[in-house]
Image 1 (spheres, helix red, strand yellow):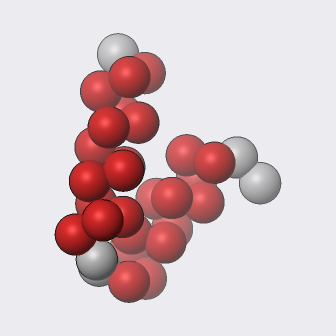
Image 2 (cartoon, helix red, strand yellow):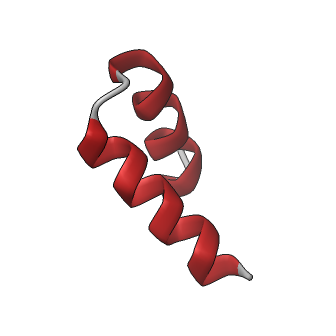
Length: 31
């Protein structure tokens, strides 16, 4: 599974600040 997808799903499931932070970092890096 793609890391970005995994992190996104994890963020949705956990709603943790860490997961949300990582997700935002990945989205910023993709731009």
